Length: 276
Image (cartoon, rainbow, N blue to C red; front, side):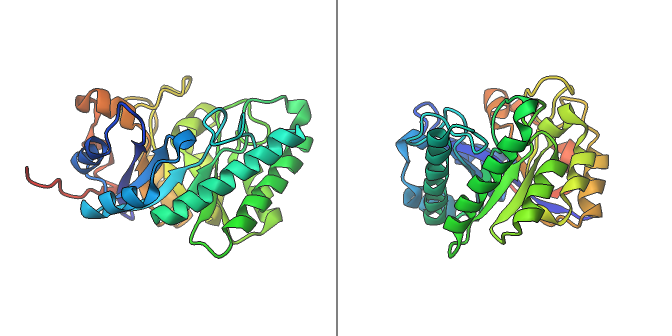
């Protein structure tokens, strides 16, 4: 079974979460690479971030793009929106995310395919999503950024099933588009292995956290009911070589004893924490 680099999401620009503290926690976890969740409405300085991260010997892998009310200028970000102004503003905000991430030195921008929606609108929302993704991907041409569409919990049409997103990306056939697998969302929808196998060669990054199969609680691995060996077998089956990005930093920040490194240690390479 292949071993993969461990990473974690950290936040940046939030008043109650100092960047140095977030980087300390990432080092303690054993991460080598980072996904950044900026406070998008303040557009915190990406060059300062890049310098701070490099100074720790870490690397920026990805950023979580705007979604819902977590926006830059849009009232709400929803790439599947059927409202023309909302759709236009969503695309524009995600283009700004691409530009920000390029300056920060990251490579993968994770985006949501939309929010909770009516299944009767699936076809119309699919068309809107495809148009939005194409516009953002075209904007990313000439950069090092790949736009990665994340699978969602149940109730997003399309977006809850990876197979639906994979079909859209196959149809668009754009080199700047890929998929992101969220293990917690997948565990509520079907299971992480099934959703990962549906991504095949389109998988470019991950969001890794645990839950009980009912609530998207973003628990550290081992505090839910995900079958982790089965998931890593599915990653091997599609030859995924990218990092394992933890998306449970808030729970670990609140209580470090919740982090159980032994759960993922058989499958990942953790970076040794620096000596204090």
